[in-house]
Image (cartoon, rainbow, N blue to C red; front, side, top):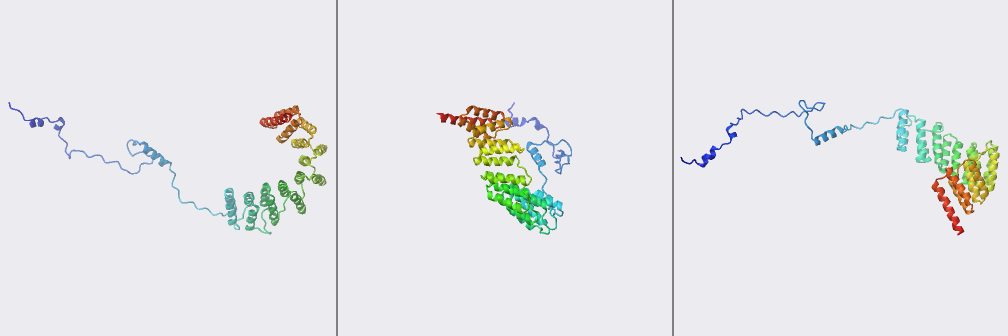
Amino acid sequence: MGRVPAQAMRAAKVPRHALVPKPSAASTPPPPPPPPRGPRPADGKPPHGKPPRRTPRAASEHAGALALPDRPGPPAEKRPITTPAELSAAIRAAVDADVDAAASLALKAAPTIPLPAQSLALILRRLAAHRSVAAARDLLAALPYSADNPAPRPALLALADACCRRGDPREIGQLLPVLADHGVRADAHVYNALMKGHCADSDTAGLLGVLRRMKDDGVDPDLVTYNTLVYGLARAGLVAKARTYLDAMAAQGLFPDVITYTSLMNGMCVKGDALGALKLLEEMQANGCEPNDRTYNTLLMGLCRNRKLDKAFEVYKSIVGAGMKLEPPAYATFIRALCRAGRVPDAYEVFDYGIESKSIPQATAYSELESSLKWLRKMKA
């Protein structure tokens, strides 16, 4: 038997799948068409079948798309102000952020829309607090007010109150002609605030000048007026002058109160007349006016500074008996005076009362006593 050629053998080794006939192009079914790409229903699900799985990126993009706000539309047009109520609301909304803008609203609305009195008061109050009286005066001059049609009295009183709270004598001095131009007479409250401003500046001449102007304008001084006078004059060392106003008060039917007496005592102690201040305490009590803790602390400090330590200790006993507190300056002055006089047991007694009565913090009490004792040991060494 002869050999079979190698090419014939390789041709005989045909794989099994090669024996299956390939389907013809005519018999192959066409692939299904892709799903339409139109918009999905409102529920977010596809028309049929299960919803497709979202990848993390697709899910995050979808969530971000849901969080996006609507596109802003065209800016809304501001409605014109046509009524006093709308003007009042607009001023109230603008005045805290920009008082000049609120004033501009008032100027633009006048004279066709009446400016409510409360709105004018609000603007004037803010101008006085954050600008000046001059700015308030300029606004009043630009508005349609005149001698026949003055600005509302409540608005001007609001302006006056704002100026008085600032306490600047120059501002209050500029306020008086503004009030007069609109037919409003300054009351005792305005003059008292002007006096307090001069007291703060230690200007006794200005203080007395306000009193004269007050009387010329026909305004009667009240108790606050006299207390301010006594305080300012006694603080400046004019104790005899301050004392004369106690008689003026009595002539007007006013009686000195604890503030009047304490202010006068303080001035007397400053002048070195601590014993005279102690006599004034007796006069005060005889007139039915009871001293308070400020009265006793003022006397205690004055007596210590005038080296009347025995009298100071009597006043201290009155403080303890009345259950009053020691003020920190009085405590410090008293402790130093006792230690320097060698009265250490008395100093410890005052220290204990200061702690028990919770007059001062413990750290302050210990510190003051320790420093005073150190000074005493140093002096004895």
